[in-house]
Length: 116
Image (cartoon, rainbow, N blue to C red; front, side, top):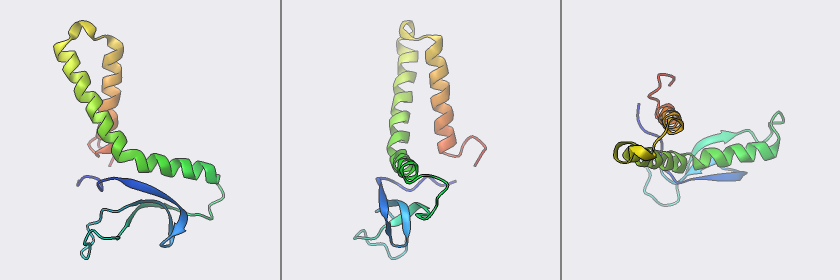
C-alpha cells in the first residue's frame, strides 16, 4: 500500500470542478507542474438529502484535517513512548490504554490493521 496523498487538504463547499468536497493542490497527475492544478481527495453529492448540509460540511472538515491529525497523533505517540521508557514513574495503566488506542488508530489510517 502506498501512503496517502500529502496535505494540506482543503474543503470546497461550493460545487467546484463538478465535485463538492475535499481537495489537495498536490497531484501525481502526469501533467502536473505545481501550478494551479488540484485533485479531489473525496467528493460528496451536493444533492444528497439523507445527511444534512451542516453534517456533510463537518465531515468534509474532519477529512480535510486528516493528514495533520495523523501527524499530530504520531508525534504524541513518540512522546508517550519516550516518557514510558525514560520516566516510568510518571506512567500509569490509563496511559497504556490510550497509547494502544493511538497506535491502533495510526495502523488503521495507514492500512496496517488488515482492514484495508
